[in-house]
Image (tube, rainbow, N blue to C red; front, side, top):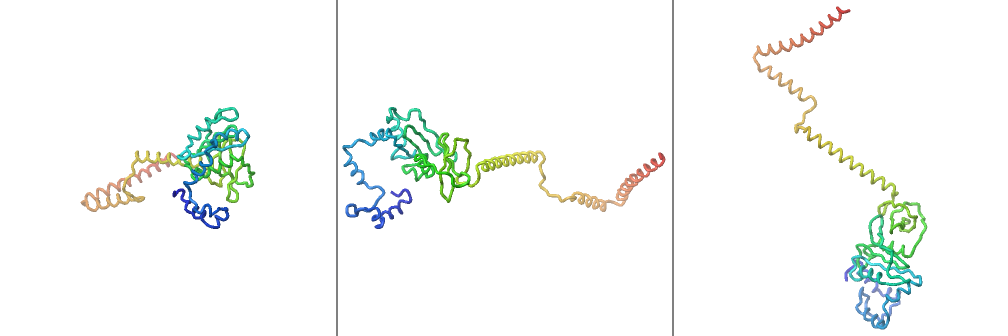
Length: 297
């Protein structure tokens, strides 16, 4: 097998003589090199367990003695399918009852992202990891890490005042992972409304919510401004030519002067006479107004 990709380095490591000596491997009885899946292991186990009962028959007694048991599987596991484990739990009888009874699978989230389901009753816990195969912890490391801490009921006090960066929820049970010395620690918190945060993040939860809301309002404002601009542009289309400030006035004056120079002298005199007449009329009108004002005084 060539999966996972790290199997090559692991194979080389477990074949080293110093590692074999540290693990007290009897190289005389087992001279073969280590491999991921040895076909001789299964027959050897079956040869010594043919007359023994199935492991499932021991599980009810273990649970009734108060020993917590965790069963988990990836929902994409084809070797040990999660559906088979679910049916096994449903038909198992312990503490005088069959299956999980009223305990229903609860959504299991990390930072509000669904990572699996969690079902627990009478010392037995069954967890399903989403998008995980036979090696579930390899495919879903965050979920597997949280699963083990929850199952072992690890309760580490907060040793840092940093804001939680990873939140884990199963139903109303909330646990917070906080960063400290580049490590992820676990802290149980009271049941309270959850707040979202990215993973990992150094910003407080309320800051993340505020920045997210502000970004949404900015986008909405930009969209409204764009709609208003487009509507005005449709109603009042902008010309494709560019005119400098006062350019049209200069062009009109130049055109009038050119047309005046090309006309006959009689026309030019009439034009200038007309212009002078308008100016005189405007001036005389002002003078008459002043005379009227003096008469009134």
